[in-house]
Image 1 (cartoon, rainbow, N blue to C red):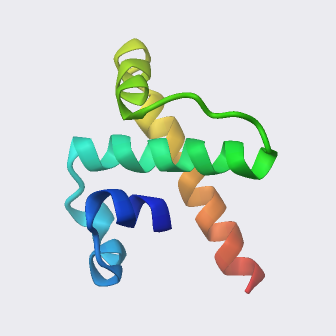
Image 2 (image 1 turned 90 degrees about the vertical axis):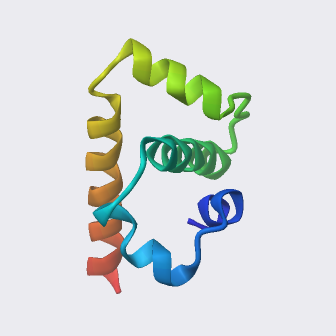
Length: 82
């Protein structure tokens, strides 16, 4: 979320309600940030940009839904652990 906030200028208050009125550009940027952070955690190179993520969505229309399902699961798991 830090990278997404930095890239988009989104405040903490706006992050809380992001899902209520998210634009396609915000969704793509959020996915990019998630993929990039996942690569960082796995210590693998990440050589893609936001345009690449948009291209992936063009190739697989279900990618946004799949990515956000995973995002929700991860967020729920972190909340449950606390």
